[in-house]
Length: 307
Image (cartoon, rainbow, N blue to C red):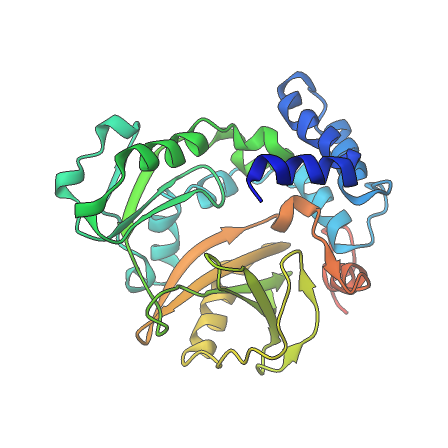
């Protein structure tokens, strides 16, 4: 089924989804951030957003989108700027090298790039072009993928405050694979009030994206967020899990909530990114009660963090 047909089927099954699409297109016309997130949340979650007394994880993430205006976060979500900051905090050896960074696609000197590399925009989430063999590089496809994301005003997608002032650029990094030889699993460490609590492992991203969740002792937790899990897939405990957790705690210090992502490549740990609002605060939990369970783990600045 092609993407256009998929969108038509989705719109028929869920007209609220289609209204949400047009809401995001009209986002720059809606000046009130609080009004926008309330409308978008209702369309996505089919329930009213309680910003005055948030209880669930999603509600509290929405609260942080509106009220957490830490200016440093703009640099920490910028895929170019974040490297120097994080490198100074945990060590340059955990930073993926930058092969180049440019203001426009036409500035990229592909002759200087290695045979394998990845391109991504510094100001968005998820947009990436992978080149595994430069002799077969599809320049049209590369430009189309990158420019689709480059031209996106990411702040207006969901009103995530850190993205409001990030200047769009294009960054190139080495292509990395883990022990599988064909993919790079994400180890996403969820940190609540400065402390790691559990790890989400994203895998099969380019075939049939799944994720499994583990506690800090690497016991499987049977819940997932948006993408499905697979209890029959046994993800081995990373060799340097303790190191990842220690680094995550350093980066999460003084943060109300942050997800710290790492990669494990041939025994080495690399920092991936920092995420302050997973799923833009509209995560589809399975089972649903985990929205409240995680909400109880997350204490907002005005709540008692002693328990």
